[in-house]
Image 1 (cartoon, rainbow, N blue to C red):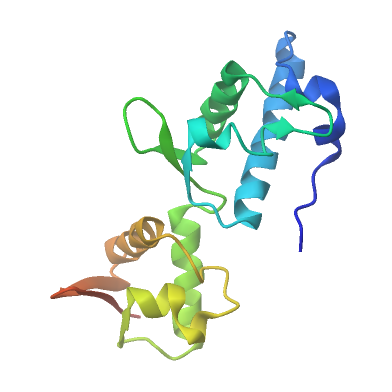
Image 2 (cartoon, rainbow, N blue to C red):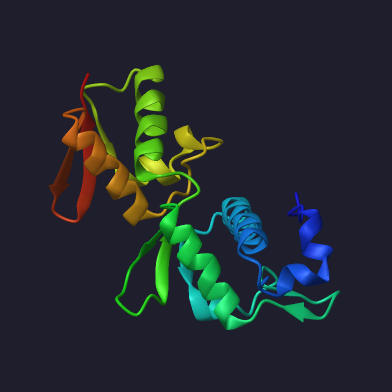
Length: 175
C-alpha cells in the first residue's frame, strides 16, 4: 500500500516556514505528524537528517517545492521537544525516530509474549523481530537498538532479562 500524503503536502505554503508564531506551531505539528506517519509506513527507525532532506518527504516534486534546511531543522527540533526523536550524535545529524516510544514497544512485545505463553522462556532478539512467529506483529522488523531500549525498559521493571551467550543475544521474560 502506498503512503497517503496529507492535504497540506499539496499546499505550497506548507513548504515555507510561517512567520506568525501560532501558524508556525500548527505547521510544525502538521510536519511532525507527517514525518512520524511516513517513517511508520516505511518502517524507518533511524534518520540521517541530510539524507532525508533529499527524499519525497521534504521535497514535493509535483509542486516543485522543498522545505528549506532551517525548516527541516525546526521540524526535528519540534519532534525532539515532543520526545519523538533521540539524537545519536552531538551534531544532531542522525537520530532515532519514535512513532512509538521504547516503553510502548516494550508493552506490545510483553503483551505478545504473555498471549503466546512465552513467559519464563528465552527468545532470541532475531526471533522477536525477524521470526516467523512475529510476522504480522507491529514490532516485526523493529530496529535492534530500539528493541534493546524496549527490553531494557522491561528489564528495569523486572519483567525481562537480557542474556548474551557468545554471539547470540536473547531475552527471558518474567511475570
